[in-house]
Image (cartoon, rainbow, N blue to C red; front, side, top):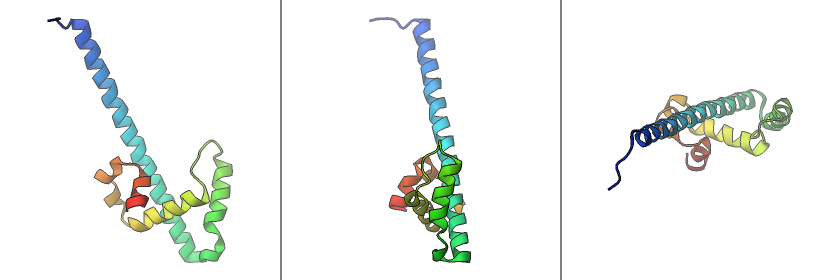
Length: 112
């Protein structure tokens, strides 16, 4: 039987640390994106409630946000409607912050 060297033990420990750190980073980014998408959806709901559906809030936001942030994807009319639906499904964001926040926001509007 081969004996594990000190170096191999160190390498394994560091590999595990890196994997854990990467997972934590992904979960943190996912949490921020969840909150951002929920907030966008909430603002859309509020603005549509004030101005009505005919105000083309989503259409205008899709165009203007895409122009303002050309390096970012996800501000299409369809995605903004999903964000609205997401905020509508979870009117209290604290519900979203728990375990469900560990999956992507798209799972929420598909299954929420």
